[in-house]
Image (cartoon, rainbow, N blue to C red; front, side, top):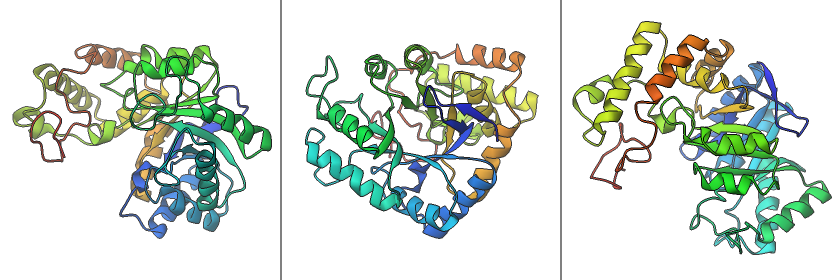
Length: 327
């Protein structure tokens, strides 16, 4: 597995990394252990998790202890204790201490602020214009104490996150849901801002919450009434390209992300060793050729911004009851 520089941290991370968000529920420690073993065997050396991912920290901590191989680990602030007050220094420290206990570690390589760009998730900032609050002081203290090595942001907005990046206070950014085959708004502000600030860039949800994890030919052709006409035509063009190239949508999606040299790593949300190995096989084939990237640029340009009413996570496999009510 190839390694890439993680910004200015001095760390080298595998092009494919393990995302713990899919260990939210319904997973056993044995299942997670098999995924971790497969990841380490493939040369993956970085894993991301969060208190907000249910049992993820606990299961990964047990798996890491049993497998016994070094790994760069990032987790996030937020969630412990409940109710969590993001402007309470004691709560911030308690969150970190709980994560350390669950992960069975004496330090955290990368500590991120979870959803710093979405007011209402956690109101991290006492000043939303300048992005200041107790969380910054606590992170600085933890860094000085050696409890954490680097700081980061884990966000999902296409433009607000860039303003926080431009404070110059953070080492890494994890941006999710906005950099994939058909959704690329992170290219406009988030990625350029991170690059200008010499930050490591991690891409989450390259399969767009399942919308790019498999083909939905029948729904694209005859169903999914919530799809806008432009998005439907875009999907048809993407599937036609897949047929022409003779490769899977997962391979195309993963190789697209690593084709960007500014990206440090892309997360896989694999829940099984088999899924992990499929992602590994795709990434090991390397970046896509320029002619295919050009074709993908043309397909992306068909719908460069989200159509109004488009569900955030396309409900191909969920019940849909109208705008905002997919479940």
